[in-house]
Length: 155
Image 1 (cartoon, rainbow, N blue to C red):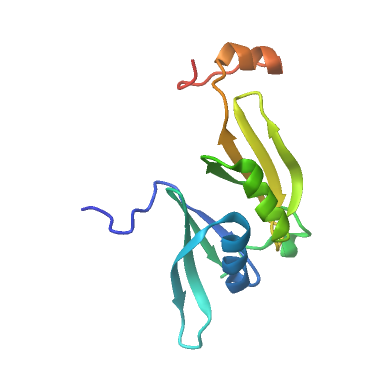
Image 2: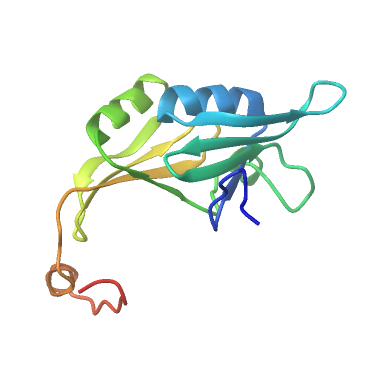
């Protein structure tokens, strides 16, 4: 049966103390689109979903002791969210900065052919945004890093 919600094979969940504010901020700063909001009888947001390109992100509050926000862990992150951009990484970074994102790494070219920047959001989650800018052969990347790279899809 076909999934009418077009969910990808993997979806990240991100927890915020104020998920409603996070939805608005993620739209403004990073260009995500809220596609689902589920609230309880009291109007409390209990689940939401956002799209960016063909990706899906669940946004909510920690719902039991197995989950926490960076604020509850002294600012530590246990995951980094990596988002693929297809164009305009410089403008994306500028937009995020204008919305209040802390830019941890300005856009810069990487040895594997992407241009990336890293940002911390309104509650401390770290995000990496990447745009493919040039084709790099595996041998070139190995030479640049001094490391052996084994990757089935990389020539």
